[in-house]
Amino acid sequence: MTSSLRTGAVAVAALAAALALTACGSDDAGKDSGADSAASATPGGGDNGSGESAGSGATDAAALEGTWVGLTDAKNVTVSIAGGKVALVADQSVCQGDVKDMGGEPMLALKCTGGSSDRTMGAIDSVDGTKLVLSWDGGVKDSLTKADPGKLPSGMPSLPDVADLPEVPAP
Image (cartoon, rainbow, N blue to C red; front, side):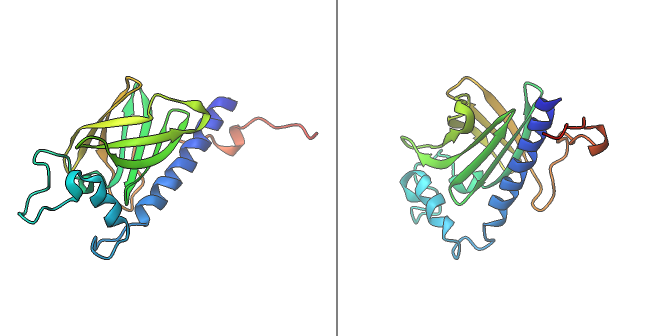
C-alpha cells in the first residue's frame, strides 16, 4: 500500500512539474528567452535563412516542445519539454535535464532521482505534431502522444481515497 501511495504522490508531483514547465513558455517564440535554448539545441542553430532547418533531415527541437504522455510496460510515462528543459516521470523515477545537440541531432540528457539510469540519454526516433518516439541508452523505448495544453492527460493513475488509507498510529 505504501508503494502505491508513494507512486501516486510521485506522479502527482511530476504532473505538477510538467504543467509548470509548459506554462513557462510563450506563444511568441521571438519574445521567449527559452527560444534561444531551443534553437541552440537544433543542429546548426536553427533556421539557415533558406526556409529550411539547418542539417536537413534533422529533428527540429521546437517540435519537441510540450507535454507527452504514454504507457511503457503498462506504466505511465510523462515527458515535458519547454525552452530546452526536460522533466520526465516514469514508474518511480523523476528526472530532469536538457535538450542537447549531440552530433547533429537533439537528444534528451537527464539526471534521475534514486539513481535510475533507464532514461538518462534519449534519442529522438521520430516526432510529428502528435507522436514522439524516444529510445533510451538504458534499452527502454517510449512511444508518447502529445497532451492537450491546459488539460490533464487522460489515463493517469488515480490516488487512493483518503478513507481507504490505513490509520497511522501516533508516535
